[in-house]
Image (cartoon, rainbow, N blue to C red; front, side, top):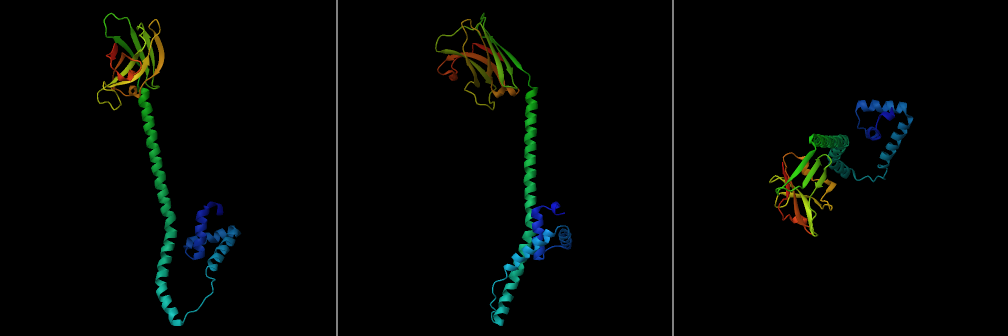
Length: 248
């Protein structure tokens, strides 16, 4: 039977028994404990000895009149203190249990909401289909072509370039992702995000896996993808106009 009671609850029950502050139901419970486990009786005896030792200081009897005055003044305060102490002993564990339960409930709700948000986000991302963008040259009769095949789930893309003229030293091609005005992302003054800086081989070709910004996971945010020619030392300045572009 002892094992069915948590150690903290058992100690509280035994302390209440020694102090004489238990209900009839608790008293019967202690009797059953003593009958099933003799060690309980030893623990009670030890608690009683500790309690008695606090009262074993030598007594000096004051004059009868002073003794009565002291007792008369002390008794109300003692009763109030004892009442508060017993009330605290009874209620504190309950209060702590309520607080702990509220904390556990709060954490459980928070974890559940976080899990739901994560599942929803994953479901939304899974619904976004791969996007293939074929950029068209601005100049007429230009054979160059640039294709960007985007995988929004992995935030990756395959960049395929054909027949794009090699640039002179100090110049690079830059792939830009152009967003809608006032989109909640950091862009340059042209509402663009620098996505990839690249060059081509002697034949004007390139095939490469590149990372893409998270904007591709949101519908209606990306308005265009474009290629410009920029200075290699500062491609982020975005000084040039597009030479190829695909509007969305």
